[in-house]
Amino acid sequence: MKHKLFSVCGAMLLACSMSVTSMAANTQVFPDVPPSKHFAEAVNELAARNVIGGYTDGTFRPGDSITRGQAAAIIVKMTKLDTSKVKDPKFKDVSTANGSFEAIAVLAEKGVINGYGDGRFGPNDSITRAQMASIIIKAFELPLYRDPDYGFKDVAYKNGHRDGIYSLYQLGLTTGTSPETYSPNAPITRGQAAKLLKASEEVKTGILTLHAKDYKWKRFNDVSKTNSDVFDIVADSELPSQVNLQTRIHIVPKKEGTGTLTFSGASQENSSDKNYRKMNVHVALVNGEWAISFDETDEIFSTPVQLWKQYEQLEQNERFIGASSITLATADGKMVNENVEFTRCDNLTLQSCNVIQMDQAGEFIATVTYTDGEEIRYHILSSEQDDKFHYQTYITQIKPDEVVTIWEGALLGKHVLPKGSEQIATVTRDPGSNVFRITPKKPGEFFIDFPDSKVAPGSHRIYYGITVKVSQLGPYLHVSAMSSEEDDMVFD
Image (cartoon, rainbow, N blue to C red; front, side, top):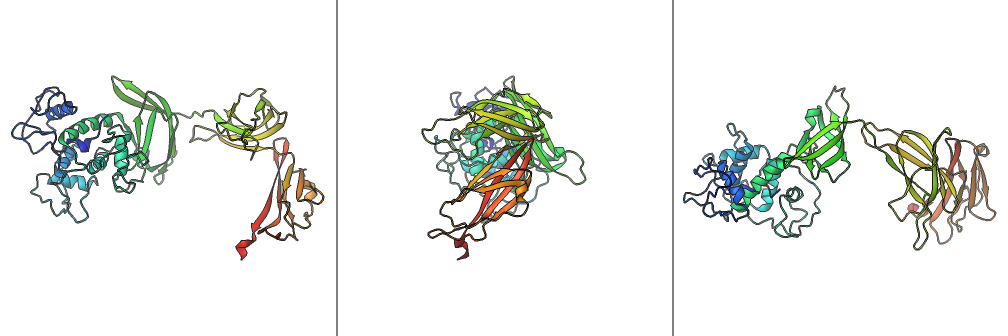
């Protein structure tokens, strides 16, 4: 894949009358384009197809730049746009007598090209590399990649052609003029243009594009994939003036293999069709060309579930305490697996963190025995998602009791328990301290009030109380508690 179409063919004068349709692509058509030139094959092929032409003296002049008018004419020829009924774009310097008028008009109408701020188009100006990038992406409806962080130091973030340049880079159509520069203001030469034209066609044929209207949707939502090394997905708009409107999805092959693609859509009014799709996408090389196929599926993959002692970080030089064994049972006590396979979490800063795979929906209790002998239970709620390839999971570390420690310098005063709270949980307070111990009895919720709480000298925090909540998770009671506090400076 090379540069890209627009930047390519620039100057080859479509105005030229030299017919070369009968000439083979591997035949040297022009004396100044010897086979040793990197663009020779592209020049000869496009000349054979009568897409480009030379000058009346028989030369091609590959080092000359291409003008904006010439480029427009070539783009229209390549994309086979209908110029029989065009609207006058009203550019000050493009009259109907201009040989490129129809091409400029149709491209302007489709939003592919723009003029300058003063009302001119500049048909005789040389097209810059940056301008070419934007025009190529729009004219050939190639994927518009939106991540601007790709390393060309001479392409400012505010450059309006930045996304177009990045898209060419991602498609393999340009490597820049150096690893760190693109030279956005440099003109495109005729030789470079020819090479880019041919490369753009090759890239275009390998990309599969899905349109929202084909699914009777207004636009796509929530586009995602797995196996990102197999293909890229790029959601953009069919309307160049509304680049953020996701009306199409490009599937760009990267390597052979199979990945998954999910997307949802904004349905048309009165549509009863489902508003999502789940697909297996197959990418293969067939006779040297990319072939993409897909099939819909209802498959759901095993989903990683992370089990760890909440809020515990692995301190420097501290030994990691992993699991020695994990069992999994249903919430009603039926054993599912007495020896669940597990791995350590990818986040190595988490203490006592292990990962298991969930491959079914339901309510479960995972019992983890750690290497230090501690045993902790986790409640796992797993549910299917019709529009996703993974299970939706919610994990709660079951706490059979809770300890709430408030800053020892806090002036809490006495604590007051509401009537009936003793039926939900037992609350004790260590003598002369701000340590509260809570043991659950049955599901419910209440608030431990600190009616006499004051701001301690040198502090700005005031504590109002503790919210206690007891839940039934399978056969176990789980208690959670959180103190209510506020910075009194907000009142000053």
